Length: 270
Ligand code: WA2
Image (cartoon, rainbow, N blue to C red; front, side):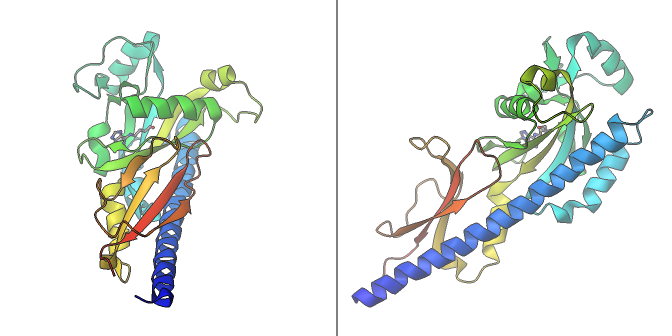
């Protein structure tokens, strides 16, 4: 291979990788924006109204009819904060028991819970599950309500599909919280958590499949928040393409606490 051909091969890889990263980031970002709007919908029609103008059926209908706005999400759901002293009354009102994510049995006594009260039909198995009983979901709930911002989990295997993905969580408060509110004030004012599941394994696959020359390159996405310990979010566990040449494209998924990037390689050696 001439030096010129090698140079060009490298450039082509770089532009294919950048294009994929840009597409993924764009689709990620429109999905995040729409989940944000969903959080406002719940705040407007559920919390600020008495009686609530939202119920499971209305939520599920609206979620299904707007799912085209959230191309990388397999579903959205709303979990309400319930403290232990309210549990009995809450369960009586709902007509079901708060269940834990692991055993799907009635949740053991905790200080507080985050049971799902509204869910898109695609994730209806979440209903009544305490989202604080899962390690990744709990970390998201705590960071979302403490910061007031949208947050993402580590990549992990999602319930039911068992696909690799991440959860996005927006906090929903009782009232408009001033930007300089303390962590304690924020926790006090929390009403619930609007979340969406990014099924990265299957929906990113779909996205990349639509692109030309897709069969030529191998793509990985990593959470590189901890630079010494990258977490695989998409792509082969053991890259087996042409390892002599790779390109890294930056990704920004909007959670300033986290760093992500895409790594691309050719499948074949020249
Ligand atoms: N949603 C879908 N699949 C999951 C999951 C989840 N969490 N956790 C594990 N598999 C209601 O942050 C609040 C959604 C959590 C929101």
